[in-house]
Length: 194
Image (tube, rainbow, N blue to C red; front, side, top):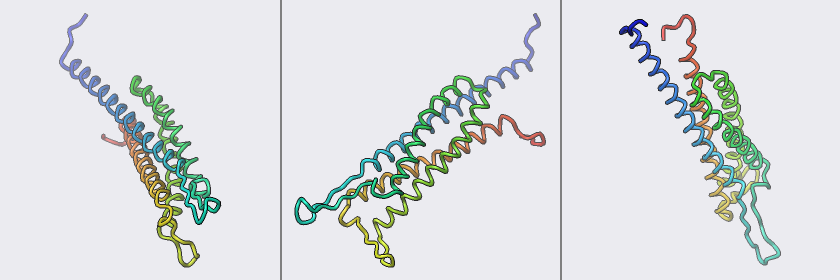
């Protein structure tokens, strides 16, 4: 058996540092996924439970505002529900990546699905934002009246759901960037000196 040389010690120290760095990035990925899941779940629940009824003159004549009355808000709930389900499953994959740092194929799959979820959540939130804007401001050219003076709770809850969804979309964008950077650092181009 030959004695360890200083270069062997330096190489093993470099390998250990790389292992801890990968594990740290994996833990950051896990935390971001949990944050995105919490934001999107809160947005889905907030929008899915919006319901406000206003009695007009008697109990027989009432106006009601629900998310299911507007297709854009229904799309918002469905899109965020799909993204939330995906994020719940991806948390499990993220744990696998922490435990086994060399799973490049799962990271590639995650970055692809994360990108799709960014598009889905952004589309749902943008469609809902247009409707919530009309609820707040109305449009006199089209004879659409602002309903937030009467349905204050409905508008407040839908606006809060939009904020949660856009936060979730932002965290998903951060996850895509983090995954892309991690894959790049792991496999730099041949002509790169990084």
